[in-house]
Length: 505
Image 1 (tube, rainbow, N blue to C red):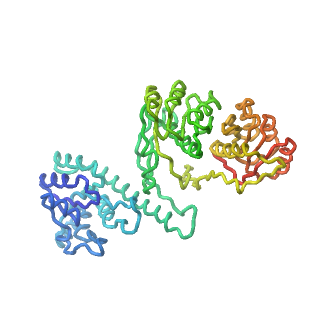
Image 2 (cartoon, helix red, strand yellow):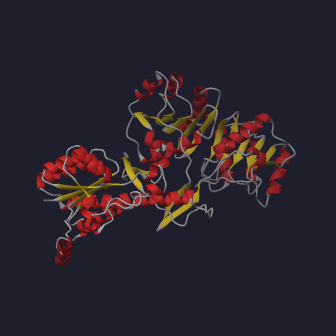
Image 3 (spheres, one colour):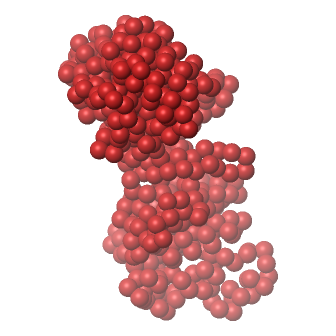
C-alpha cells in the first residue's frame, strides 16, 4: 500500500485530498493539527507520533524530525543497502509528501521560522526519483487525478513538483534573510552583504520591450509588504493586455503623480514625463498636463492622483493614450473610457516605497538605495541677490519634483505649477536647456527652471534666462558655481541650491 505524508499549515482542500487518496487505497500519515482535521472528517490517518514514538516536543518545534520520517522519504528504492536499512529499523517508505510551511511573511518572527516543514520538502524534492512532493494546494486535484489514472505520479510530474518545492523553500529562506536585514541589522548597513530575490511570475505580458521579445511581470514575495504591492491589487477595467513598456511607463507615471498632494496629472512617454500639472481640480490638471506637449502625449501614459471625472474622461477619450491610471473613476467616466477598445484603464492603490533599485550587469547586479526626492527647503540655500517670491517657491518645489523624474541630463521649465518645457536624456546640459526652451515656446516666461545636477558652465543658465526664466533651482557643487551665480545676478534672477542632485539613467 503506498504511503502519503500530509502535514500542512494551510489546510485548504486537505480533507478532500486525504479522502480521495484513502479511496484510492493509500495509507495516510500526518501530524498534529493536520492529523486531527483529517481524522475528524472520518478519514483514517496515522499520527506521526505513533510511528516515531515521540510526541511533538519543545512547543511544537520538533514534530517530524525523526529517522522514521526522513528515512521513509529519502530512501532510494533502487539501493539494496537503503532497503536493508528500512527493514532493519522498521521504516515504511513514503511515496508522496504533501507539506506547506508556516506563513512567515504574514507576521515575521522566530516562531514562524519553519524547520520540520522545509526539511521534509527538501528531502522529498531531493528524492524526486521515487517521491512526489506537493507544496501548493492548487496542485492537489491534478495530483489525485494522475494517481487515479496511473496509480502513481509520473516522473515528469515528480520533476516539476521537485523544482517547485526547491523554489518554495528558496523563497521562504529569502524572506527570512530579508527579515533579518530589515529588523535585526544592528550594524546599520544600508546595503546588505547579500541579496536574495524570490520572484514569482504573475502575468505574461503582451510582449517585451519590442514585439519580438517575450515579457512577463514577476512579483517579489519575500515580505508581507511586497505581497500587497499596488500592482497586485490593481484592476484593469478595459483595453488590450499590457506590454512590458506599458507596465514600465505606468510604474513611472504612478510613482511620479503621487509625489504631489494637490490634484495632479502626469503624462509619461518612454519613462519620461512630457506633461505634469497641478491645479484646483483634476479636470484642469489633466488639461494643463496634456497641453504641455500634445505631440509627445500621443501614445502616452496618463496618471492622476484623484478620481477621474466624466468631464476629464470625455477630454481624454479622443486622445490616443496607451494607459490611464487613477485611484478610481466617477460615475460615467469608466464607461466613457472603456468604450475605447485599445485603451488600458487601470485603478490602483497608492504605491509603496522601494528599498533598493536593481539593474542587471554581466554576471551580477548594480544595487543602490532608492532616490529620496523630498522637498526640504529648510536646508536649501538662496545664493543670489534676488530672492524667490512665494509664487516662485511653489513653482520651484514643483519643478524640482518633476525634474527628478526626468532622464539626465534633465531641465524643466515650469510656471504656475505646470511644466511647459522638459529637456531629457541629453549628453550635455545646454542641449537639454535648449530643448526645454523650444518646447515651452515662451509659455514659461516669468517661470522657473529646475536642473537635476549643477550647471557646469553658465551657458545652460543663459539659455534659461533667454527663455524668460526668473528663478532657478539646482544642486550646486560645480567648480564654476561662482561664475553661474554671477550670471544669475547679472540677469537679476533668483537661484536656489538644494545640495542634492537627482541623476536618473
